View 1 (cartoon, rainbow, N blue to C red):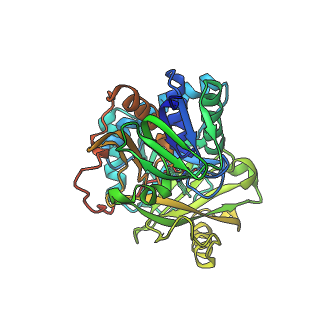
View 2 (cartoon, rainbow, N blue to C red):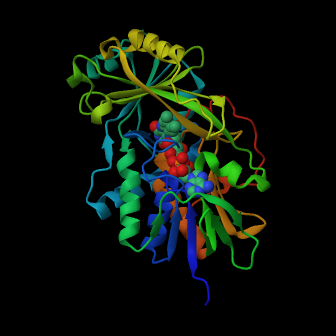
View 3 (spheres, rainbow, N blue to C red):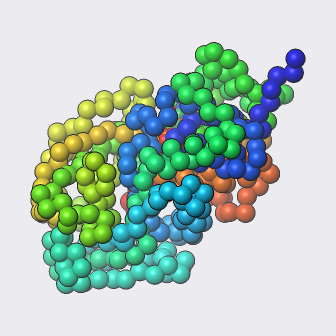
Length: 386
Ligand SMILES: Cc1cc2nc3c(=O)[nH]c(=O)nc-3n(C[C@H](O)[C@H](O)[C@H](O)COP(=O)(O)OP(=O)(O)OC[C@H]3O[C@@H](n4cnc5c(N)ncnc54)[C@H](O)[C@@H]3O)c2cc1C
């Protein structure tokens, strides 16, 4: 009997894999999705209730790509009948003349996306929750908000399944033979054939594709949640997404209260390199204390951290993504290295991967994400993303 050959096998059902599965199934492809854990698990990078969505980036190609990403998320809302985005606007705070704020404003201007510089008084009249000194740069961008992250992943998977995708959980892929006449994927219990293999394995990508020696580093990251006494002041209708680059180059961000966890806050940056299977999942007391000290100064009404979590970033040296067909193997597509800022792009990356798998090309500009690019080191401001 001839073995079944799928049009595409997607490895990993996190943010990127679920979107890819949906787009492939929506295009009528015969898709298999293999996920090593149960869907919605908390060991990777896409769990939790919220992720920031925004246009402002210091690198203009991200701002440009976000136009298509917003449209794709809105299309998913229409297809599912679910609200998946909350738009709150955002304030970016920084010391006067900070490079990140200026570069982000330039990217917004170049893309024709409206933004405004505010002074401390304008911020105080609109969002009195913030305590800022005079002379800070404050950039307001009205289209920023947050995605309902866990719901986005489950929606992509549900819609993919409704369109015929075969989604298998607790099916860890142990090996991929992408050079076989018919590319083959092995799990502990079987093997599967696909015309294309799409690897969206997040922090496990480097290990799964060890032979390719991809420049990926998995790092340990932490987030904290706060429950203010006056909760109404920090709801999405009263409080924006915010980011701040401090004078010392630390980068903080926060997302309004949403769901059961409260206000989410974190310090974004290079974390400690770890193995995804052997990562200490207990948050550090010093980290929580640092965030606590920061909010006491900037947002005193937020109160004390009530909960903290550990999760993973998969970083490239320049913190730009890898989205490409492997240069020596047209059957193998790779999307990895989302470097702590990939969730907002999931919907559009899913479309790009589906187009690449089914037609070999995409109209969107993905040349910054080539596998064989020169990987410069992070410029410092490129790191200030989430
Ligand atoms: C704390 C935190 C905050 C963040 N905040 C933001 C934000 O505000 N905005 C933003 O845009 N981005 C943000 N990000 C980044 C964003 O969440 C990630 O870039 C994105 O979720 C990555 O998705 P992924 O699909 O590549 O990885 P994952 O979600 O980890 O998915 C990979 C999947 O592959 C599966 N898998 C791996 N190996 C195998 C195998 N061998 N066989 C089968 N399955 C396998 C894994 O189990 C996993 O389910 C944040 C990330 C973190 C950790």
